Amino acid sequence: MNPLLNLPPKERGLRLETLRKLMSEAGVDAILVSDNANLFHNLGRVIAGYGYIPREGNPQYFVRRPVGLHGVGVHYISKPEQIAEHITLSGTLGLELDLLSYSMAERLRKAFPGVEIVNISPLLRKSRAVKTPYEQQLMRESGVAQERVYRNIPRLYSDGMTDIEFQVELEKASRLEGCLGQFRISGSSMELYMGNILAGDNADTPSPYDFAMGGEGLNPSLPVGANGTLIRRGQTVMVDINGDYTGYMTDMTRTFCPGDPSELNPLALKAHQLSIDICNACAETARPGVVASDLYKLAAGMVENAGLEKYFMGHRQKAGFIGHGLGIEINELPVIAPKSRDILAEGNAIAIEPKFVIPGTGAVGIENTYLLTSSGMESITNAPVEIRSLS
Image (tube, rainbow, N blue to C red; front, top):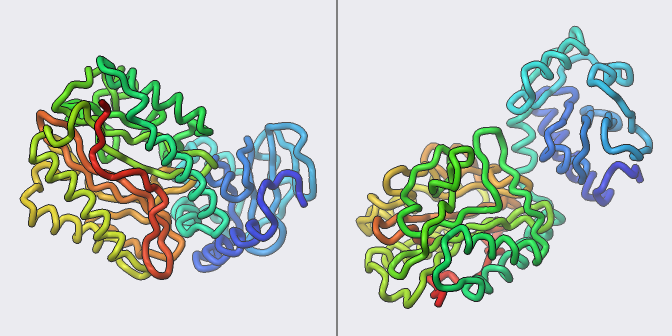
């Protein structure tokens, strides 16, 4: 076995088979991957370098760092132009043009004169959308660890805490449980540190990022999440904290409050129960072959019937989705949105997060991660769903 590869041979074969089938359908002769998520998916580790995967023949690996990775097909390089010294290529070469810098894409283009360069970022996202049994097991393990942390959340709170003080305790508990701390997000337009803790009306603060919930944050350099709000009775605290324990993430949101939850605004209690009902309805409806947008329409219909459209997926600023695929990254395919053309497939990992923001109270609702099986959705994030007291 090549010591560079950190995947079981059978698992490596399954991933190559899926990728090469998509390459064949797209008419791509070979691809070069350098993005960390795509390298991790195809090698089982992150390197500074490139993975070269032809439609036929053996993959090759071009490494700058770390040193000491040797084996068949492994070449150490100091610049990307050296890749062309080791392979002969004609036809079509796929690059991650959604992610590569312009200058790097141009350097690679010039290194392979006469070769057609195409964008394979969408193809790679598609190749990761269906999780193998091995990947599903890693996600289950993350879900179990994340659930242990969430069940212990009320014990981490002390009266008089601010949201950021509470978040520090949650982060510590997560890290001690084995959380890697890495919150990998596709693209450069979204950033987040360890998760989102939203207390009271801070949940209604718009953020520039395409997350379901916003928050002011502590600094304009990272304008999302906790902002130092004092946690008070009569307000909610929404917890959406990192679930990456294996390199494969689960996503889970739960809602808490100081004091007795029954004392909260009745509108907030109604919205929270509706969130639970929407998750259950989506889980019962989702099957391989279902159009992803149909799940959004189901949720939107339930919200309309309850008269809660004003608060659904935000109040001042709304998110345009109720769910998303996830795994190595938190925003993978399929997307559960009104105009999504994604078709659900067995092996998808999907987070469903119908959330509400009630002014004067805060955010309510839940989020669960599901694995789509042939018979329906299996939840792998199973902490209690009711609003729980922190007192």
